[in-house]
Figure 1: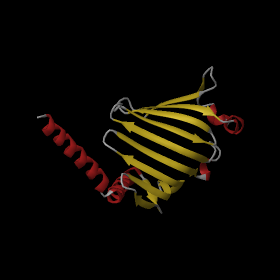
Figure 2 (figure 1 turned 90 degrees about the vertical axis):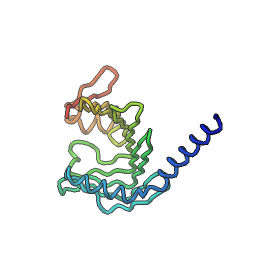
Figure 3 (figure 1 turned 30 degrees about the vertical axis):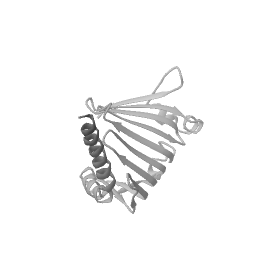
Figure 4 (figure 1 turned 90 degrees about the horizontal axis):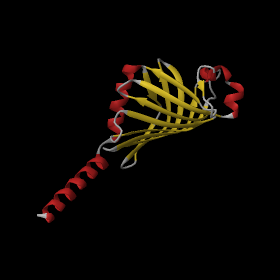
Length: 177
């Protein structure tokens, strides 16, 4: 009986792993990309590469309402059943935002796990400093905690005025969407 259960779980695990590996990730990505157009977001000029269990995008230009908003050098998409992650490397934000924030972001990592199904979390590192972001899906609230860089403190005081500063020198921003 134990041997049959072991075989059942072994075959089930093999099937799930094989399904994840052989899923046409590039086709699924392009399908989801067409769904983004409903929100006036267009991703173009990207090169999509299926890496087995992950999908890599290189040199993506992001447009919002037909205005170029960012260029992302590398994106790594990991979609697993229990854990999902998006990793962005070398993001350059549009020069239209130059008066609000520094334009270069080294990396951004967005994570969603079934063990915390009501929150999407992100860690972002850029010229502005380090930011931790949490989005509560049920309450539709965004919480941002910013550890500003000296550049952010010196040159972007107007942006920081829209945030609350605590005794540790962190800036927080909360928004209900």
